[in-house]
Length: 546
Image (cartoon, rainbow, N blue to C red; front, top):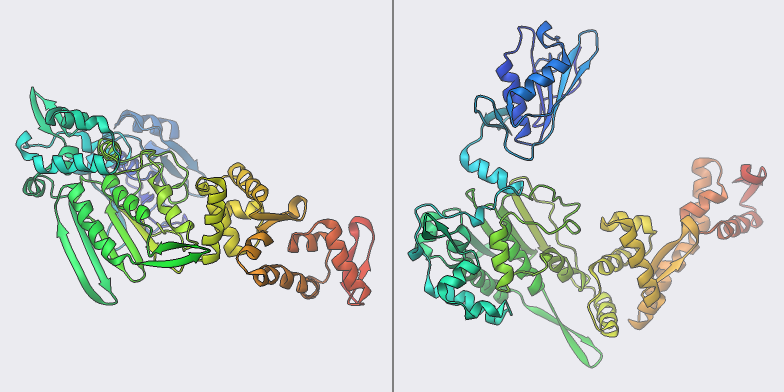
C-alpha cells in the first residue's frame, strides 16, 4: 500500500518500523518551520510505501505536545492519525514567522539536492539574517558594519547625495545640516559603545568604493548591453549606490532612443522604455535586494527589452499575484527611507505603480515578473511596439481631466483594448484586482465616455466606446469588433446545436453576453429561417435542429 505522494520540499516520509529516534522527528519539524512549512508522514518509507507506526508514536496528542516541548519557540503542529489497513501519522508543520531551533540548539532548514530530493541541512548565521530580513523581523541595512569606521565614508559621495537632493527635490531641510547631523538623519551612521560607526545603509550610500568592496562584497552591481549576440558592454563594479545608479542610467539613456508621434499640432516622444519606470525598477532592485547573500544587481539591455535582477526573492507576504496591491513594505527599511528622503525613490513606496504605468500609457506589453524565484527577483520590461490609438486616447483624457489616469483605469482600458469586450468578472480576473475596485473603475470610464456598456444583468459587458475609435479615425475597427461578432451569432448557435443537440435562450445569452430578450430575437430569427425549431414550453423550452 502506497501513500500516493512523493517527497518534495514540503513533504517528507519517515520510516517508524524500528522506532524513529525522537531527535530526527524534531529536526524534521524545525527544518520545515524554517523553510516553507510542510507535512511529515511518520510510518511511511522513502518510496511512499506505508509500513506503519511504532507503538510509542501512536498517540497523536502526546506526539504534538512532545514536539512543542522540544522546539524553541514551541511549534504548534497538527497531528492526524490516518487510518488505513496500516495506520500512519501526518504531522502538518506551519511556516514559522521566526527562526526555530531544537531544544538542544540546532537550527535547520530544507533544500532540494541536485537530484531533486529534499534534505535537512544546518542554517548558518548569514542565512538567519536573510531569513529574518525576508520575514521583516530584521533591518539588515540599519545594522552597524563590523570592522568599519567613520573614515570609511566619503565626503565626495556625501556631496553627491546632497546634489541628488537638490536635483530630485528631496527633503531640502537636510541640506542645512552639518555632515555628522546629515549622516545621523539618514541613518548612515549609528552609535556603538560611544563611537560613531557606519551602518550598511551609510556604506552603501556614501562609502569609499575600496571599503565597500572590502566590507560588503555582496554589494556588487553589473550592466550588460547586447546587440543581437554581440556584447557591447559588460561591466561589474562595487560603487556607492548613487554612483552605480548614475553609471547604469548613462548606459540606459544612450540605448533608450525615442520615436516621435504626432498629435495634432503637438508631438509626443515615445521611448523604448519609460525613463521613470527604469528609475523606479533600478531603485527597487538596489533597495529590496538581500545584502546578506552573495550576488549582484544586474541590468541587461537588449533589443527585446530590459531585464533587471536582484538577489533575494519577494519578502514574506508579497507574491506576483498581489504585487500591485499589497501594502508597501521592504527588506531594507533604513535604506528605503534614505532613498525616499533624498528624492531618488518614490515617496509613497509605490514605485511598482510607476513601473507598470510606464508601459500602460503607451499601450505596450506589460512588465513581467514571472521569472522571479525564492532566491531572485527578475523583472523584464519588453521593448514592444506602442499602440498609437491608445496613446491618443490616454493623452486626450488626461488633458481633459488635468491629471494622470489612475493605474486601475489604465489596466482596465488596456485589458479591453486587447480583449475587445469583457464582463466585470473577466476584467477582474484579467487584471488580478479586487471586484469593488474594478466595478468603480469601469463605471467611472463609462461616465467619461471611454468605455461603453452593453447587455444587462449577468450578460452585461464592456468595450472601448465608438468615440475612442472615431477620434482616432478607426471607425472600421469599431465595426469590426462589433459587427463581425453579430454576423457570427447564427453560425455559432447552429454549431452549439450540432454539438449539444439543442440550445436554450439561456445558452445564447451566456454565449454572447446578451439579455434574455436579445437572445430570444436571435433564436426567433433562426426559427423563422427554418434552421431550428422550438421544442417544449416555459422553462423546458429548447431549440433543436429543424
